[in-house]
Figure (cartoon, rainbow, N blue to C red):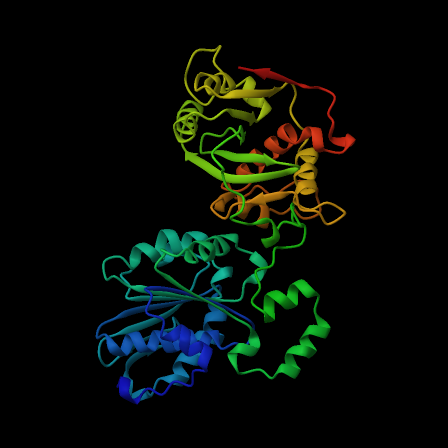
Length: 419
């Protein structure tokens, strides 16, 4: 049967289709042909492997019916099908393979499957749990593969942007493709230009150029590739400045150098479900012989992440590791922390005095993707993995860069240096 399958794939779509990686991501503009590509991949797997289980996911049932199911049924001759259900969107082929089209809005209903291929259409609109808790385990016993096709969706679901970043690592083993609408070969350039005239720049870039655009209201709107450079590295000498945000679930330390009037972020250390004492030992072991100055969350002077005696605080636990403490008497205002960080990222003169090493991936995600709650000046912290790294950086900025800041950042209540 597979020899009778004729696929009308355009050149860029063929590159995605032929990618040998087990997990392949394709972020593409509107009308690229993503749904057709996903159906072609699903049908190819079902034909080449007898009794294969293939699952195709769309954000809603109606989207699955209107795009995936309609395209799939148009591609498959009736002679290849032994059973089909229009009500639940399932078909079984004569070789025993089964293709299902389902909605991804209720992940728990998809548990218990064993899959050879999962195709996630408009993946950026699907839930994080669907991939990590349901689909990825379902692919394990059969060594199944996955295809993600989507428009970036303005980072409506930031988990997909995180996964995209991870897939771009040299040793990830993932395939990653990014194409515009015009690259797809189905839409004329004149049509795209008409859309450009009707959309705001951010929407056009996301929908037609497959650009990862943050939603409106970014906390750090000017942070971007111009701030990310491998130049921001350690020279092995001098004092290191470390910003720390105290949490039990996520305990980050942002390691920095001051170079002239610039703050270079050279590394990040992140512990999960750990203690400040463990963090101090790791920092001291990693930077043996170096002078370390910590700029921690001011509340750490009164609380602790380890079950020790009442006189022990997060700050004193760091001191025991040989780390000096810049201990502020009162908490910083959230607005001051973000404004000071933005001032270093890019000031009104266009000067960028913050450089971040690409290895600081969690911090970069914070700086790129954190947004304010709609209609407020409060950051959206609904994702429990967000904000901790940028908060740690903010403490370092406010403490270590204070002498260089404008007067409005020269806070009245000064720090206490602790050794």
